[in-house]
Amino acid sequence: MFNSFNTNNNTGSSAFGNSTNTGGLFGQQPQQQQQQNSVFGSSPANPSLALSNNTNSNNSNNSSINIPVLENEITLDNAHSDTITNIHFSPVNQLQFISSAWDGFVRIWDCSTGSINKIAEFQHTGNAPVLTCAYSSDGTKVFSGGVDGIIHIFDLQTQTLQILATLSSPVHLMKIANIGGMEVLISGSWDSKINYWDIRQINSTNPLSFLQLPERLFCMDNNSQGILVAACGNKCTYLINLSNPQSIFKTLQSTLKHQPKSIKCFLKNHGFSLASVEGRCSVVYFDENEHKKSGFTFKCHRQNSRTFNPLNMNNSTLGNIPGGYKGAFAYSVNSVLIHPVYGTVATSGSDGVTSFWNTEMRHRIKGLQCLNYPVTASAFNMQGNLLAYTLSYDWSFGSKCSTESNPNIIRIHQCLDDEVKEKKKTTAFR
Image 1 (cartoon, rainbow, N blue to C red):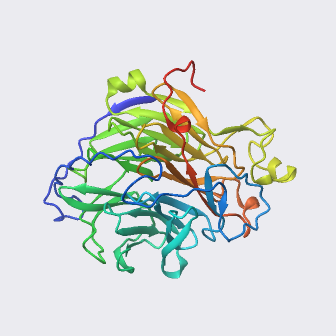
Image 2 (tube, rainbow, N blue to C red):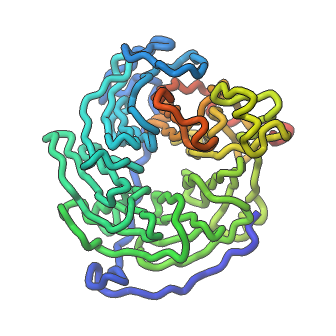
């Protein structure tokens, strides 16, 4: 799976913020508090979710694409007017979440009434497409980044919008970390840079520190032990210790042949799962010996192009797509998640399928019904009893399938234990 585990001895340990090329020494990140696992809708801090099956908003879906209606879900049909790029649950409110989209909007939603209701929104200047969004650790602020290179900060309590930072390149990735007692926003941009921002410093042009990666950055995640993992276009995943954030301390060489798409760290902080556009997902461990023993790659999100017809395309359109009617078609894995309680892996792809995997036993636990439309983003809430996912066109089939009537849907799925909980007995990975 991985050819080699190499160590990079990059230097740079100047005082924090004293240099634009090297950042100062961050302190050790404290352990996160263990999350409580309560029964669905029973969190005392939040109202219960009176989930009625297939509850739709008053907005109607004008698309001719046949998207199946699933049980144990609530749906908002016209959540945005263009492709939804990201979705995240609040870290403190089980029933609140945010979404961002190419229409330039970031919206804050609440689903405590059994339907999805917008409680706030803000817009990037000039409708600049928004590529990423994130919550602060206390859930009171929302961050967003887009093709305009501007990072916005929105205060949910005061309903005020400010510019946190301005970059010269589009911002497409965001993570929050507590570094040395300071809450820091970590941004990834199209210029292959990782920037670290003090969220208290408004309208900044200079980050606390930054790291220039050797190749294009496609996805990143951080764990509770202060390790940031960043997957790039040179088939390398870089490990950054956030106690020394301007340096790469380890490089993992991947044998995945195509572009990485999504990455998520394991709960045990000993590795991560990396997904790609080729319909593959890998299980990677930081320790070389553990990886040799337990690391592996598995195929997923693949359909028989002779029988599978995504987006209800006609024969002439489907036949013009590379791979159409020529056997198996591999779809992009747009999202990989780790269940916050059970540690199982969830993947969602351009084939419209969401699957749950027990990677320790190398077994697919269950999958949701194929929706015939790309799932562009997904997220678990803190308790893992709700899965939010988005259905939007991801351009995986080119301009032929892009129309103004393409749906942009948000769904909340009530997760059942038999979908996401590890199975003790299995015979083969499939």
